[in-house]
Length: 390
Image (cartoon, rainbow, N blue to C red; front, side, top):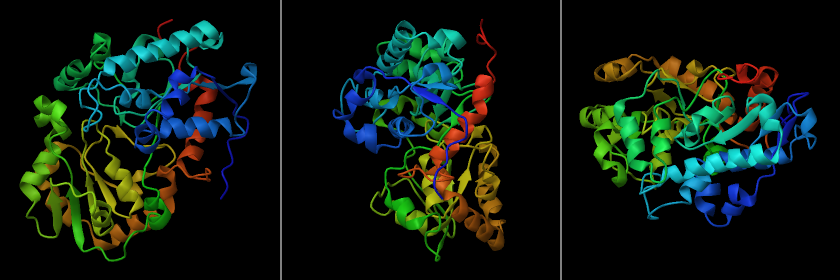
């Protein structure tokens, strides 16, 4: 059905200088509009034509900051080349640019100081989430992120990798010692799936014939730039899967990438492993859903998009942690066929929730995002008046 924005929600969208958003699009169209991180652009453009938009800031419930941080990061290589976002990326440059956006808003408008930023909404759609900006100033705001990682603490290598990539700003590395997502106020959102045919043709159903019981094909070492941390990539989960289960009967498991057949293989599989990459989340979780393959998630500390509105236990399987890996074949073999059929039928009824339809539709990602924001507007995401550090 048609998208109907939440009644009463009013969002003011800042008109930032083009260098912070639209001015980058013509320079880097592939990453800024065509990558899995480009939801920041879509959300901005849809808000501008949504009935939630208000031009009167005094009546706004929330203030949206259209800062294209992922686009900026991908547009600022030290040495452009394959392997984004780890190929000699100066991520500190993006961190400093986020500070420049904050300075512009505080210097040009009075609205930030009214709530210490608590009613401001920022899209941070890269793997680094809100770690692309200073914690002290942004921690009150509502962040839209693809990685809803609520781990109590990060492993030491995470900081070392951030330090290796910090470039212009050592503050970026220090920022990565703190959470990049805070569940009480932030919103986990889906990535932008850049293959429209996935949801145009499959619609969460895919093939009826699924000869592959369990599927995984993917990288096991990260990019060349991050090779010093290769053993930490995926927390060792992808490596373990490929090293131990490649010969498992009924499984198709390989570290060899085959882009030309990848989606066809997903659509021919019953259960698709979705282990982490550098972050807890993986785009293959969403690709699997759109192709009717039941995702197997390897984390209990990952908040999925719109989890308060969607019961993911109906459409996914979860492995508690890496300690369960050795028992993975027995665990998946124990799932009866009727249970898999039920999950696939559930996927067919919810797939829109992980896609950004054009124009937005009821139950799609943009629709659910506005519902999440509407729920946060009265309390500013639960942030105390004046902020947490006031």
